[in-house]
Length: 168
Image (cartoon, rainbow, N blue to C red):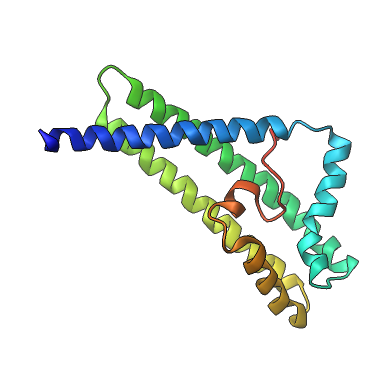
């Protein structure tokens, strides 16, 4: 009997986790409905807060800013893809007779999107580091470790800029 219960408990655990993610995503989406003007100001101040804390000058911040804008757009695209796949997974699980092959396909798709997000974040960190003078590169990585290294999911959820995904 316990053997039959294990898959049910596993799927139930996934559903509960996904529902939590959907609620968190919805909350983040609602909070990001600020006006465009205040959004631009916030982006500029948040985008370089880490860089300014290590002593980067304004020219370094200006060089990094276009990279962060491109990063933000791509990050939000991936977030939307993950949200869509999560909804598909919940719907597949909620079906009267769940299609296990479909569920596995969607789970694999979500893992692929998560891998894309990880690649995006790592590439962004490397590009930003390369734009800084050599003496600031070590400070950048040290500050990055302090700011983002201990929180699971912080970079994926808010990105390097600290800004939530917007409907772009």
